[in-house]
Image (cartoon, rainbow, N blue to C red; front, side):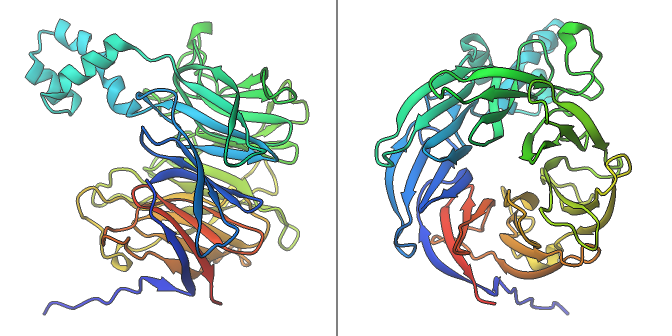
Length: 419
């Protein structure tokens, strides 16, 4: 007998407002404004007035520098905004690098398409992109003292794909980017004392990335690379994809050095997206939260999920708990084009509540007051206005406790807890 399932789409959370804008990669909320980095060109970065949270209003938008770039990440400190510049469809387009070698093997275009896992018609697209090249990658620095008219202060070009997710404070930008001579993204730290001319002060990479200096890669392709590093006091907490995470000593900003390292077992299929320590200790111990990023899911493999790490001793870090969401609690699992699993949490761990986006699983709010037993206290995975399933990508929380959840496809939800 088939059992009808009733899905609880929201618990202990209500919607304050929905802003129907293009989907995005990151939302940052500061001083009554939300800054949204959109996923796809020609949309770039939107600034949203939140003075009336029930009626958010877009007051400014800046476009990507060209049609080949997206600017889907954004950070703001004071009146300085930084937006990334990264090649759109970068992983797909880089498949074109392999075409010449496959032709040398004697493969036809049909054979090349099959080997690359693309459609035959994509071969021309890949070759066109290869001939065009890409040199726009980097980041842009803006003056947003007038939120309605952002002023471009500088455009720092890096290399390759360009810049992915990053962190910043009032002094420095902690940029994750490809750089010439390296395999995969590395950390490049820029001094922001003069926002019109950011200057590089240091770099950090994992052994095996600096191939121009003769290092031998330790991973396959771009599997071992920096996703991004978060500044926490005098430390940088760096998620390094399939290589787990690293803790760096940043007390000397000109020379960040390795302080701690953890790599998850090979049985864990999904890469580490973000890692940060709680700001408070619990029972005299220090804990950190790490989250995987879910990709194409194969039946029988684990989904991306959340880890609670005991990091009291950086020489002996270990996972002490994990949290996952069963597919049975999400009605859209298995639908074409729908991702389900961990992605990102709010990048401020000033309490024991963890606000995490779960793609089709929406927003999940966990309490880690007992770090050995994370408990979900609220969630929100309501379909969009057109009935499309959520693809919740990023989340931030303002100083009043309002929650801002950005969808990859269908805009921004403003939510509040009802506990």
